[in-house]
Amino acid sequence: MQERYSDFVHVSLEFVSKLLENYNDSIEVSSCRKIGHGRANSNYVVHTNMGKFMLRICRSMATYNNELVVDRELYSSIKRPRLLYATIYDDTPYLLYQFIESQPLSHEKTISDEVIKEVSSLCAKLHNTPLFKVKDIEKLDLPPFRTWYDHFLDNPNTIKRLENDTLIAIKTLVKNSNYELECIDRTHSVIHNDFRLDNMIIDSQRTIYITDWESITVNHRITDIGQFFRYKGSFSDKQIKLFQDTYNLYAENPLPNDWMKLAKLRDLVNLLQLVSSDKELPNYHETLKTLIHETLDYFKDKI
Image (cartoon, rainbow, N blue to C red; front, side, top):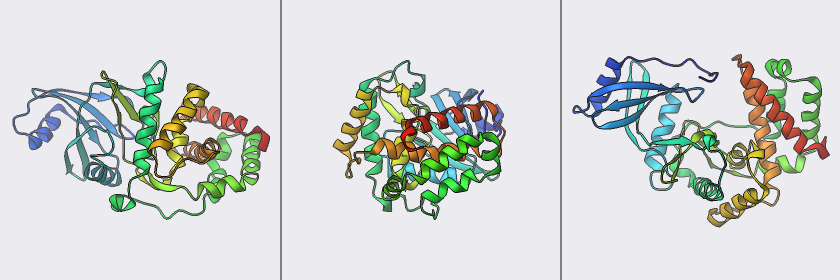
């Protein structure tokens, strides 16, 4: 199992059986298996006489509430596993989902053009969502974007984990990116906020579903795109152009010409936030450092 932000929550077969009986008293649970994928929530595949289900133990009430809003407001616009049942027991929130035989897109050997087109159209449709539909999600009162860098660069964990040359390079990049940072602040919409290949699954019919909606919020729409292209080497230049063209076909607000620069700058803050965490995750932090260096290489003309 990968390094986790929070400890995995273990539940007994007896408890899971009682939980699902509250959803449908005809259900008989035969087994439940924890899913190792994921860093925060605790997920199980539950086998029953009525087929498989996915049980999620949420890490917070905000997670629980956000996923309820998504189920209520985005059911007709975005493909995702259906939420079947939600409950709170002993102050812990539980969500029961439709189980889809699938694998994460991150497990695909290669990302096809058809996958790029489907993901970009889903991304655009999400960003088209009227803000009133998500008025009940948890939102933060955020300062101007350029100030976010200092917040994470001054963090003791960031200073401990990144070399001084890297910190200086990031500060130089920020100083030389005033125009781009102002553009990012003008791109607010509803966003998934963890729009990575790990949070997209594909079934045997090649249908793609977006999962893990706990962090949905209103923020810079370029956030989702930066997260999707975090591992830019996984995509060809042709596919990047295909993403742009498909997104613009469905989006109410087309991407600006320099959208990839904006996406990389926006995702750099996400990487800094992750590397500044209090949790000691040495392998994961090494991966983050590699991604930060790759981002700096992308902007070497500004450093």
